Image 1 (cartoon, rainbow, N blue to C red):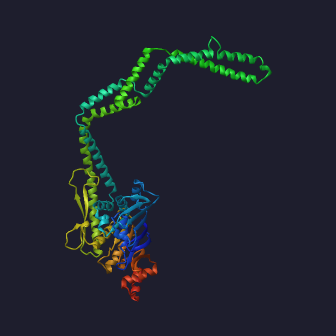
Image 2 (image 1 turned 90 degrees about the horizontal axis):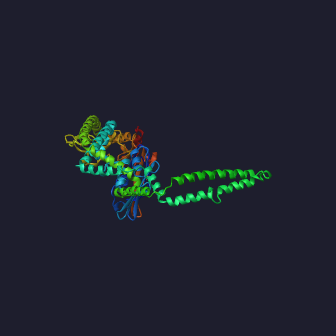
Image 3 (image 1 turned 180 degrees about the horizontal axis):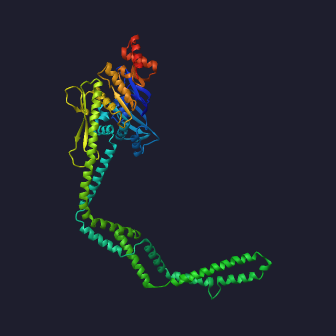
Length: 555
């Protein structure tokens, strides 16, 4: 929902701050005061291309800003998250238009393109009465509205799933066919796999090979080091650490009775003796395993060289050879079964197509029922809105392609005959802006605002009508305001009286320059504005009384 709109140096508005709430907000003012400037501002915030003419004369740029809450527009919130533009639960859009015609836009303080701005705005606000920014003129939007009216969510999801299944199977088939004759590929892969499979490629086997190779490569040094360590720790010839510890313990034992703490020293030396004995035992085992065997070393060298050769050939590390071999095996299995899979795929694709047809037929039936109900309700409302004899139809056009479509087996076109005896034409080709606005209003009221956009703007929806019809238009707008936020630019008091809030746009000259101001009207001011709309410049007693009656009659 739109909660705030800010205008600076925009057309004839120097500065304006507007706050909006739920329900119907009406905007009125004298002819030429700039009532539609608010709609123009929202259009530019929605991504409409701008020119320098919207910048107030003498200013270097115009600034427009709008703030929306996202509680009632989950699709917009999801769009912001997807594009990493989300900021709490609010959406702030700002657009600056320079006097040279250039412009920039930001969403939640981050720059966006006009294309992105248009995508987001289409989820936030719907402007009726301007062909360029009216979602109901878009056939995809018409289809979405019909589906919402018919509550076909379950059927639509089933059709989308069936079409996705068919597409996935077709893509798999095309991939297999693109491979062509794979016999040469199979032969080459079999050779590669056999070559790798002859080697021990498990990570632990390679680690063991590297360890054995290092040990054999340094066998002489290891033997010398072990022999030297053994001689120094416990050798029979010459002094050794083990015998030295025994002598020390013996010397201390003779005097230990005179100093009790020496027994602690003896315990420590005893532990050290045990550690030295265990070290000697391990040294003996290590030494026994060491052998200067040139033939064994040559064999290790050969195996290690072979692994490095294979790694270079397959452009991987030795440690990655095992996973590369497994990948080759997987591809071989797939290629060997390609022929059988192709034969099976043909049947699966046809089954998927049949499944799509079945669920698409169910969706089509629901759409036909919804189209008849929507057409009937909207046609009745068109008549109430001053277009007697007008007719609204929903044309379901079957798709010629046999390709399963995720949107179903047909497309929708909203058709309108504005006057009796005229053939129905597509809504997007209706020429009259006033008629278009009233038809759009009738569709929205009939559909009870079931489209996903939370804010609807009607620009001069009451053009060419008056009297009782104008009152009905106002009532329908107010009814729509019960489920959606509605903004309406109007020149009719019967419509303005139905608003939950009322803004007046006025103009005045200051130092020879025309300026517009926007004011939120309180109860008494609103009565005066309605009287002006009823009676013109002269506010008579009768006009004021009629204005009071209009406000009193609002339900």
